[in-house]
Amino acid sequence: MSKKSNTNILLLFLSSIILTFISNPVLSQTPSSVKNVDFETWSSIEINYKPSKKWSIGLEEQLRLKDNSSITDQYFTQLEVEYEAFKNFSLGSGFRYIKKNDTKGNIQGYEDHFRFNLDGTFDHKIAQFSFKYRFRYQNRNELGVSSTDGDYPNQHIRLKGSMEYGFKNWKLDPKFSAEIFNHFEKGQTNGFDKFRLSFGTDYKIKNFGKLSLYYLYEKELNIINPKISNILKFKYTYSFKSY
Image 1 (cartoon, rainbow, N blue to C red):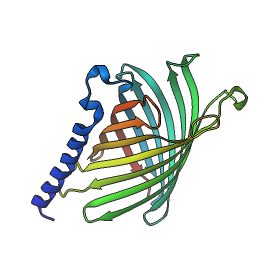
Image 2 (cartoon, rainbow, N blue to C red; image 1 turned 90 degrees about the vertical axis):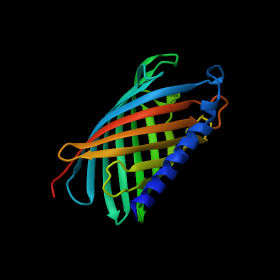
Image 3 (cartoon, helix red, strand yellow; image 1 turned 60 degrees about the vertical axis):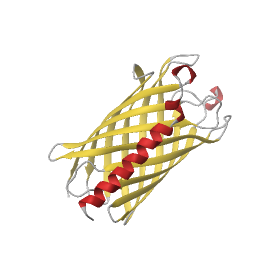
Image 4 (cartoon, rainbow, N blue to C red; image 1 turned 90 degrees about the horizontal axis):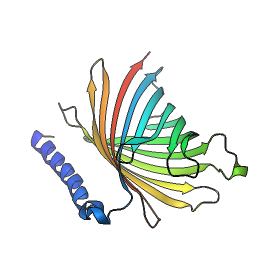
């Protein structure tokens, strides 16, 4: 594919992102009419180890800020394991210990939560495009609070699709993803409760690691006053292998 064709595809891709922002109802409203909108910052460091071609292990520390990135929302430690079952299809699981800052409940302060997830991921390529589809089951619960106290597992089914375009001789390949969340929990309203869009890129530095920068747009569904989050995500990943 020629450089001119690559440039045209990039311009078309960026134009669609700009049009999305322009048509965003939040951006077209006056400040007094916008409610429950927040700007968040997510920062993380991850170490990724591949003991073999089929196995991958990741350990991540992440900090999330809320209320226009002025206070801590949560921070967590996460361990992830992925196994390539066969070509283009992987199975994975993740375990996350969370310290969540409750600033709105009757009893405020940091709460201890534990979350685990089970994933199935399929990926493939078409020309310069790379596509990935992920099915995730997620289960989160507050530690130290039993079901007799009214605490039941917060569960989600998450469906995510991702797309990346690979340019020749250019490291900042654009990536876009869309994800929808289906919630189910005893005693709560169940169904689709949130969607998330992301756009960004990764930059690899030889013998140093990978730097990632993404913008995420997240909105709650099926409630009267949905929360809208504009998120800036930073991540550093160091990867190594022993095979």
